[in-house]
Image (cartoon, rainbow over all chains, first blue to last red; front, side):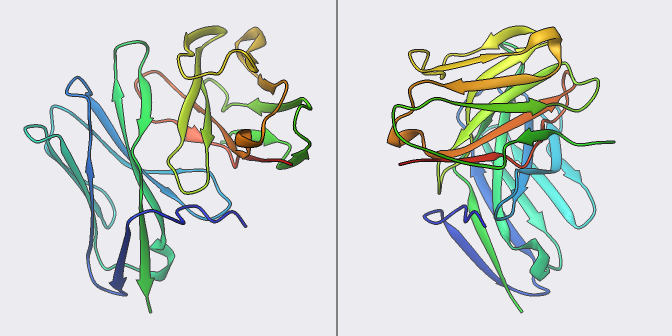
Length: 113
Length: 112
């Protein structure tokens, strides 16, 4: 299948450990942020989102942190599982021009069993 | 709820030929996006529709790429003529206003 993320930064973690994936965004006017997971041969899959009026949001095993001061976003995955192995992208949205979703470069997560 | 449908799944063409991709968004999603994803990179937005109107096509190479969304539902993306550097996965996504985009599986284009 499609092998996304050949030359992307890679994070390697042991199964059961927590993972932290970081992302720097560029537009200070961005007001909505999304994390996507992309497995080989598939389109990006929505994980979790956060709006700019929040600095933390939790989902099932995932937490997103937003630091608007330094334009930084992170995704924390608790008790990482082999099925979490994928490329992770952060995406920023601005309401200007019709709510455009712009993707960052991505990080490849590799989970060792 | 059915997801975003794209076809074909794979396409191989020679340079200078033309190709078209089709997308059927999630029912009720007014916004439709086409992205180009080159191997090892994040998706790059080519064009964004709101219903049947273009919101943003600033990254679309208009000399060779065109897209339309008739009746505000299905969309087609066309490349004519194709170049070697157009080899990529073409992703279609749709969303409701102010909500995350949901993606199809993509069409993998190889230009030889």
